[in-house]
Image (cartoon, rainbow, N blue to C red; front, side, top):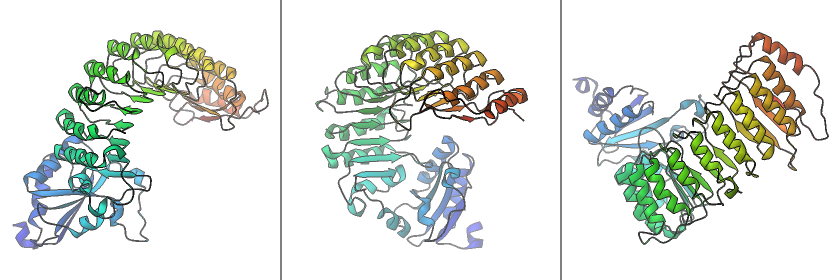
Amino acid sequence: GMARGLGKFGVVLGADVVYSVASAPVLLRAAESLLSADDGSCIVLAYVSRWPQVDAALVEAADKLGLSMVEVPSGEFLSDGEVAVRDEACLGDSAIYIVTRRGQSCSAITEWMGKVEVSEAGEMTVTASEVAAGILEGGQAISGDAVRMLTVKHSGALTLTRGGCEAVSAAMARWGGGLVSLRLEGQRIGAESAECLVHGIALCTGLTCLALPGSCVGSKGIKGLCHLLSGRSGGGGHQLRELDVGGNGIGDEGLTCLNDLLGMGEMRRLLLSLNRMTDSGIAALSKHLPETLEALDLSSNAVSSQGVEALMLQATLLPNLTSLDLSFCALYSQGAEALANGMKHMHKLSSLRLRSCWLSDDGVIEISIGMPLCPLRELDLSSNGVGCLGACSLAEALGELTQSPQEDDTLSLVLQRNSIQGEGAKSLVHASGTCAVGVVVDIKDNPLGEEGGLMLVQDLSMPFVLPERGARRGRVELSACGIG
């Protein structure tokens, strides 16, 4: 009835109108009823992804109604000289979709696809929607140099389907040994679709970077990839230098397959966050880590002090490690002590992230003992139980740091959301001003209160005493500390 009363239209616009699973099919059904039968008629839907369930409902509803959804960058709808009112960073996970009846063409989509090219360096970044629209099938979209780096970024509601993975695999097969990097960001492809990628990866003998964060491949999917890359499926050896399989739930079972892979290459970056790995899995992994490793991310796993102790037993075999992330692992003081002992042997460790590791003052005191023993330039202790004793211990450690030859040498000490009060904050402020290296101390969201704030103001009003030539004045972040 509504369509008969309003007539038919070539373009139907909708802006941020999908908020629930139930509304998705109703919206698309109503909008489709308003479309004219002309080839090129379309629904333009501005959409903000808020919940995965709503994203899936929107895609499912379009498929059941015989509609095709293609995501188009919002910049394509801004004419020359037009300025976007809102900053892009404020838009969140937003997207613009052109929805057409299946089988019909749309000039806006055709024109936009012709603008997707390969950079001079061989980089190509696409979305799952672009893959579904055939962007990887060649033609005018694949111009310039051969593709060396392919990224399928997460954007809006659409993620790679099995067909999309097959398209990626086919493209990899065409590019062959020229492809050195494949990144699928948050595509939630699952184990079965991951199998489709194996065929393409098998032909990319020069692949040095494989990143599948948030792909939900599980232990089954990681087994297939490791089986291929380790040469057991006839794919030959691997040249991987970076492997990111964070957020895949591979567990200790998947980690076992990964251990075999690590012993056959020169891995430099290994990112394994959010994978349901336990202490026993980490203990086994530690024995297979190559000495070439530079970055290791084990954050958000079921790792306790026992896993850290096992890892630190191998610290002498990791001479090139520069970055270690154990955030959201329950280390407690015992784990901190083990970590501090390992820091003695990590002569290149510059970044250590320990957010939400259940560290009290005792644990932080252990970490502060290890600080001067390695060239730390980033230490994140946010959301722990750091109080005045821990803060004062960190301040003492700052006084023991030595200056490196680099003029821009700066240490970032992040202590957000702890229990630091006046005396501890004052010691950090003073140490940041007298340290041999530049120090940025972030103590946001700590309960300093008015008394603590007054102490800091008095200290900040005094000129810093620079004990030696080359010492730099520090900077302190103090917002949300209840200073008044």
